Image 1: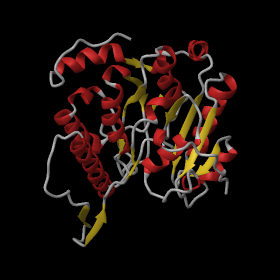
Image 2: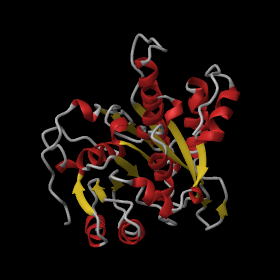
Image 3: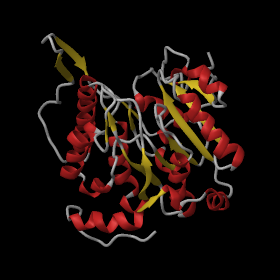
Image 4: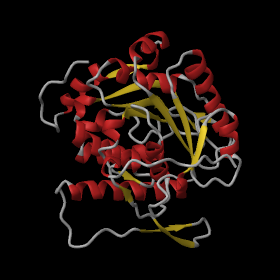
Amino acid sequence: METYTGRDARDPARVQDWLGPHSSTAVDWPLDALLLAKGPTTVSVVLPARDEERTVGEIVSIIRRDLVEAVPLVDEILVVDSRSTDATAARAAAAGARVVHQDQVLPELPPLSGKGEALWKGLAATTGDVVVFADSDVRNFGAHFISGLLGPLLTDPRIQFVKGAYERPYTGPDGTVQRGAGGRVTELVARPLLNLYWPELAGFVQPLGGEYAARRTALERVPFATEYGVEFGLLVDLLETIGLDAMAQVDLGSREHSHQSTTALGRMAGQIILTAWSRLERQGRIVTSEPPSTGLLQFAPDRQATWHDVSVAERPPLATLPRPAGVKEDVA
């Protein structure tokens, strides 16, 4: 892949320079070509899952059938059970995944909650040279969600991080499908923040998307926000660590998944804003006499108020910790 020309970070043309040579589609990466390019590189797929018994088994089965048995691109499938109360762990194991509970990975550390915690624990519990993260609630999952992300990483040693791009339809309560109407927090919170403060990242179509892949050496050098700010934080931190030229995106088509309530999205938005705030502080771009509040007061339709804590903890770069001796499997 070519490099973009040296323009000011706030010049929109800089993003255009990056987009062309750093963008591709899943169909650009046929499996036979990827297998030839793979060589000795090992690949781990990490699926964080909390109460996803309806979808996780099929996702694991597709990866195992198409990318382990038919074409051996993937060496390891790990499902990180994030304190599920349903049969997520059992169904993932039955489909052929190795399953661990997030609290059983690095158990000497105080347990934390959230999606980012599951991702960080998944990184710690795997060994692949390349790690692919994918959500476990996708309803139209295909093997191309994984192979597409692997394409740039297996064929270009300069690329260290690949983000999935896709169209996100929104299915309303009445079943009506609105194309491109998904990703409400992305459009209302994440995209404006990136354009304002990290305009180099404005070219990522789905900055909060859960499908992305990276070289282990890159992922182990950055911290992980433990809640829903994890994807935002990774983009910003990797930009600072590896640079935009080492980042790419692949169009995966359309992605359908379960939608969260507006109140849940409000809490997610609060966590993303706090994650962005912490990065601005860390980069010396804002100075404040006191930290922002971590409380969010939300109102039900009957005007009853509920206070929520949207604070975001953070796990350190994994490279700063001793390598774990091992973890127990959780197939209960």
